Amino acid sequence: MAITVAQRNALELLKERFAAYGLGSDEFVAAIRQSILDNTDAEGNIAQATAAAAVRATPAYQARFSGNLARRTAIQADIAAGRTPALSELSEASYIQAEDNYKEVLRKQGVPESFYNNTAYLGKLIGNDLSVDEVNSRASLAKQAAQQVNPEIRQQLQALYGVSENQIAGFFLDPELGQQNINAVAAGNAAIVSAAAKRSGLSLSKGQSELLAQTISPENQLAIDAGNLFSQASLTAGLTAEGVSGERSSVTAEDVILGATGNVEVQAKLEREKQKRQAEYQAASGMAETAKGVVGLQRANL
Image: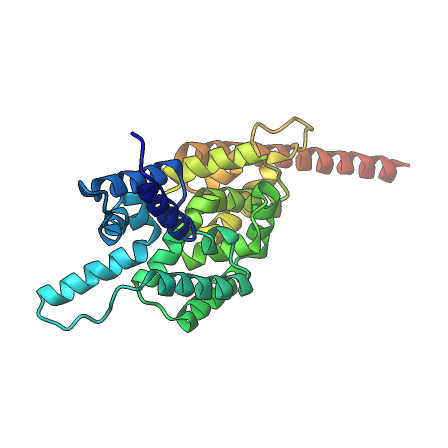
């Protein structure tokens, strides 16, 4: 449908206004156009304020300013409970300014760009009415937590996935968003498995580490206990080496890791290998003693 000059001018005006907020998709512009058409009377007069209000009711706008939606929900809850609302909705200008203030703090703290350029995350901060100082404090604590992660695990996260310390900090800052960005639990578990193997002198590929992590913690729903895995794996890591006879061991690095987590079947395999080696050592020791005695006897008869 062709539009009038007045309608086109109104369309361009609203397009420019909302584009400044990052809302300029073809679908959104089509919604603006339709809103203008819907709010033009028979004489061609355009109710621009009403048209703009209709645009603000679209899902795209609501998602862009999700913090206001959360604040509105809080306001309604206060009113329903007979309380004076503690919050108020922000104007678009105030909302953008709040985002900019958060971005500056998060950028200075070294938080991943995927956080401070994420309107949904910034909307959560605005919806919860967090001050800039509070956000700065949380980001600082998240950074400290990341620095305290076991350095061996941190090294494996870097080696396997290229995960930086700042990305780890992002997970501590917001686990849900952090996990979306680096699949934190899965990556962390694989890194723990890889680090446990490396500490014990063993080697696992990325694929092996990931498969073991999934076996130990199905769907990677829970983080693996690194301390326990490290200590238990070190007790049986030597079983992967050749025995006294030079025979290649049937025990693999995967067996050592799974056995350390309590896998009964694998633990039985490790125990069998241990007993086999003890028998080999005893036999070898007996042969050595016999040989020593023969040599001594021969020398005594000279």
